[in-house]
Image 1 (tube, helix red, strand yellow):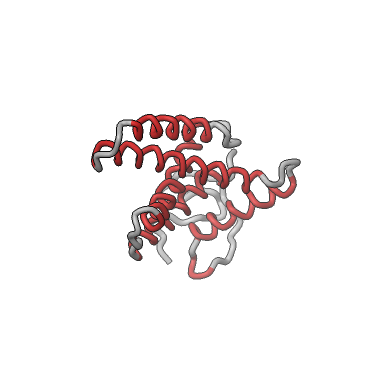
Image 2 (spheres, one colour; image 1 turned 90 degrees about the horizontal axis):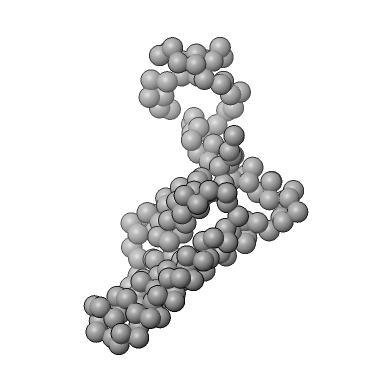
Length: 165
């Protein structure tokens, strides 16, 4: 268990003298408090999605992010094809249309702050790029690609689903 010099005392004061809101001690496997917190965030989101009138909010958000990733990658690929692969300038027009669709799709996410929406989308974009790498370009992502995408998706989930005060 790593404490990094910080301990949680029952009185709400750390060794450095800073105060904080004490949380009840919860036994976690090997003291993995960060992992426990991430799991708690996801569990709270799933519970809140089930109790809201739009219980499929998470599914809608995931689909919008997937569609936005497809539109953005396709738009960028169109410009890549035009400028790097010598394809017709018509590819640039298709790229513009695709990138406009991408921007519009991100406005459909049910999140009050644009920056949080964009930050969470970043993880989805990275994972979708690796799917594009495999499906369109025919290159298998290696284990480091997959591990990195997994970390990015976990970060995106924390940004999007974390409990807010």
